[in-house]
Image: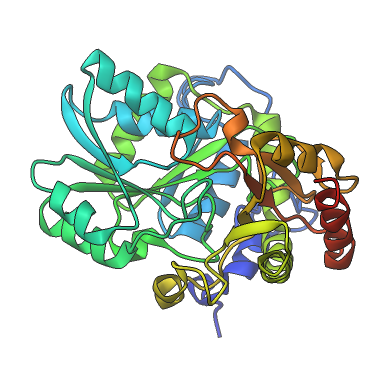
Length: 372
């Protein structure tokens, strides 16, 4: 009986995809292709156009997301490439509390006239639907960074596609283990590989995945001529990280659930944002189509922004740093960044839960909260 890889679980695909063909003494891992120049007559042509190590990493991401993938030098490079395929003056609808890098980029495009941008409460389905007429791109981020709002992805994607609108989804927080937007009908899925996929806080990289041959060609062209290419060593590191992605993410999600519940009962915490909590405003919606609730939570401390900073500075296991998705737990007060949305509460702390023992993490959190 022949093996059908399409029936493999995603956790298995993370381990098996992107491997060299098997033969006697064949290499188990994809090698690092350190080449900028290729002999004429082959399919690559030049180092900015392709690389075997890129291809291996892209194969692994494709196996997870269910669409043909391209990797880029960073998540923002991937996002910029996606936006670059839009015509001048195209109208984009996106979250008003999304990732600050995307919001900053969209605001710049809006001010220059490059794009017309409407920012909405992405968790308010009626508000999003009302903005769809005349829209060229619906950019969905769910759960949002850092407030963990959940977009009603199946309904919004379906409505946008029925109106002939391009749909792109930032799947960084959720990952393919939680939701697969291409299966819901989205045109493009973006991942910041920097985060959960690579998982070791040592790589900057992004990816775009699509089932559209036309879009793939446009995105590949954008990568070629904007020069936003990943280095082969970084691609190899990312692929190495993907091998343990499912194990890391599963453990982190379990710990996040425990910590969210305990934080919700802590006297110095006014609110916890995590769709896995039954008391969370996003829970009922999230459980309809999310297989997990993710490994990131946010909570607001009682006090001032300075109090929240003090909490983040006082931890011994959790590192006070930006970013997320690594094996180590990280937290920060998001409003310390001037580009963060002004509607994000001053005392909100975003916690990316890593792979440490959950009881050690909880003791560390309690110690830090005791400083305010």
